[in-house]
Length: 268
Image (tube, rainbow, N blue to C red):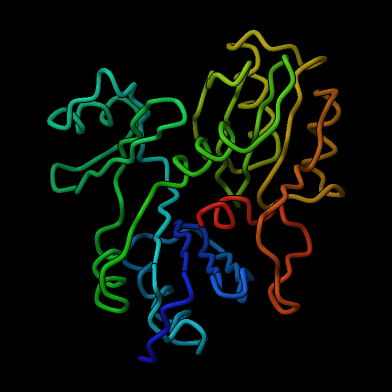
């Protein structure tokens, strides 16, 4: 494997798809940005086979990197205030809203932006493969990156803002008011109506008016999608969030719509 100390690799891993992104630190340019959606949800064993196949298909991924980051995107996570976090109780934090096994490895990320801890289950078969392929690497949960990015980088007014990051059959919802996190949750869905139901229910529980809250959509959605039109029928201020980045993009890696790769592009 060729040695390269100027490039970083991020791999976003979920049961519904994989994303890969390479940042060249010397030129401050994204050189590779790939997303692979699965036709149906995989299990961790099938996911590993897909990851192996994809990495072997792209010569750009068959090199070593200065830094490799794995981003685990799943519903197996729980947010805990740092003041109350106890590493010995991590399984207890998760068991109330996630189905976990006694054999599951549990990890956590500290989020300085709001002094919280994100407890989650990474896929250990994936971690073992990445270590065998690239050597030492870092890993985080997708919700960690979302929360940190929204609270540190995004501009807000005095009202409430809700971010919804969509993937096929899965989305994260983050609600913020006056730079305070109100809610971070994930939902599995099968129809557009499911998304609308969870969104409207969250707004109701948070006492946020669909007539005044600002809703920003990221991930796998476009403005001409039926889901966008459905949401716009019930929420007055809806937009596809177009983030700005401090790096550029090569012609081959330039995203058509930057909001679709919001998590992985904010992992650097």
